[in-house]
Structures are given as C-alpha cells and as structure tokens.
Amino acid sequence: MADKLEPYRGKRDPRRTSEPIPEAAPQKGDGGDTFVIQEHHARSLHWDLRLERDGVLVSWAIPKGLPPDPGTNHLAVHTEDHPMEYAEFEGEIPQGEYGGGTMTIWDHGRYETEKWTDREVKVVLRGARADGRYVLFRTRGDNWMIHRMDPPAPGWEPPPASLAPMRPVTRSRAPSGRYAWEFAWGGVRILAYVQGGRVRVQSEDGDDVTAEYGWLRPMGETLGSRAVVLDGEVVALSGVPVYVCYDVLHDDGRSLLAEPYERRRSTLEELAIGGPRWQTAPSWPGRLDEVRQAAREQGLPGVVGKRLDAPYEPGQESAAWIFLPSRP
Image (cartoon, rainbow, N blue to C red; front, side, top):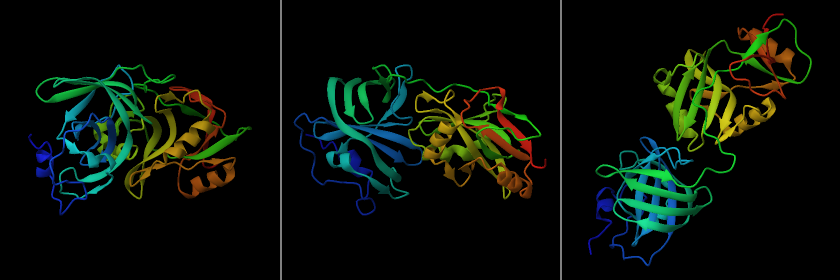
C-alpha cells in the first residue's frame, strides 16, 4: 500500500518544525471518526478542516472558515493528508517553512459520514463550535467548495451588506440624563465589515474604500472567525493613520442596532480591538467636564455624548448623540 504521508513528509523538515512527522507509514484505520479544525495564521489566515479516514487526516484549507448558513458556499482547498497525531497539534511553525505561522485548535470532536466519494464528502460534525451537516464537493480540477446543509442557528442573521453611520446633533449646552462621553476625533468616518478574518471598509457615503485601507487587514486576522461590523474614524496619531473604533453594530450573526449603547459598548470592549494601527476609543460615562477639558488640551474639535440607553440609528442625525464643541 502506498504511503499516504509521503507528500506530507516531503514538505517538512523535522529539524526545523515541531509538527509531528511519524517515520512509519500509516496503518489503515478502523473507521475512526475524529475531526479537528485548526485556525492557521500563516501567510494568510485560514482554517484547516481534517477528517480521520483510513489512518490519516484528510485535509482541506478553508480561507473563510465554515459557512454559517446555507446561502453561502466557501472555498475549500484540498491539501495533503496529515498524520493522526496532527489532531492534537498546536504551536508555531517557523517562518520560511511550509505553512509557517501560528496553529491553534479552533474545534474538535467526532463526525458521522453520510457519503464519501472522490467528488463529494458529506458529513455531520459534532463539535463545540462546529455542529451540523456539511458537504464538501469538487468543482473543477482539484478545486472544492464547502456548503452548510443545516439552517443557521436560531436567531442568526447575516451581517448587513451596507449601513450608514449614525450622526450626533450639535448643542451648546450639555444634556441631562445618563451619557457616556467620548472625544470627537474630527477624522474620516468609516465602517469596517469583518468576516472570516477579512476586512471590507466602507466610507460614510457607502463607497467601498477597502483598497485605501489595506493596513487594516491584520485587524481582521486578529478577530479570527468572529464576524463583526465596526463603526469608527481614521485619525492621525503622531502622524500615523489609526482606526479608532467606538461602536459595534453586528456581532457573530446578531444585530446590535436595537441594543442600548451601554450593551454595545460592553461587546466592543470584549472584542479587545487593539493593535499597531487600530484601537478602541476611550469612553467615560458621566465625566463630561474632564473629557471636554482633555479635548481642549489635545486640540480636538469637541466631545460626543452618547445616551447609555440609546439604540443605534443608521443614517440618522439623532439627539441620542450630542456633539459639544471643546470650548463652551
């Protein structure tokens, strides 16, 4: 019987990588049903789906991860078979080596086979995050796609294709009520749509300006498989453009538009948006005087108060958000 792991070994140097590289050829399995999905931060972020079959892990690289609903198929690149030991592998593959980057286990569990041919693999995944029926099907040559056969989880909604940002009204006096106060940055307003580790950027007018903000690509990779829509501004900090994010409008299949600002803010902080050129904007509930003074000292145009119980109103100029100039 041919050694199924020969292509795998041929791409790896055991002196340089900590990946498991068994010397012996794999023995034909006994119908095992292990699956693993690994998040792979290599040259480009992707997820590796591996299914136990005849003593090896048959593998596909999925650039955008598993599709969350039946309406979208995702590319699945068939790769070489991996050894069974790889089902437990996590670690750093050295740069310059095949697949160089960080590998972590995104999910694992058991699966059931409904169909397995050279052109179609239909399985039921039983994991903590991946749970349901999927089919991998061959298109042209060695190209494959993956399709979710089950309906999406109850309450799941696809992220919006486009939203117009909410805008504050200008006032000369502070409002009464419960508000959180933020800096008015005076930057370029953009919305960032993140899905499958990829970032699509939209201007305030709804234009796709992704190409202008290629430096935001790593931000999408830090969010991994989480699908979110972010609102914020690009501002110059020490002469360097930085995306300052101050709201989240959609999170992993759940619209947050009707949620109060206070709850959206909590979700935003949980995302921990922070990197060399992107950050979460600070927010101070009830501390208008201090924030306004700091805005004056930093030469910012003013401050924005956001009512803690207010929903997000796309495209609206709303009195739930109040702009106050830095100087009364």
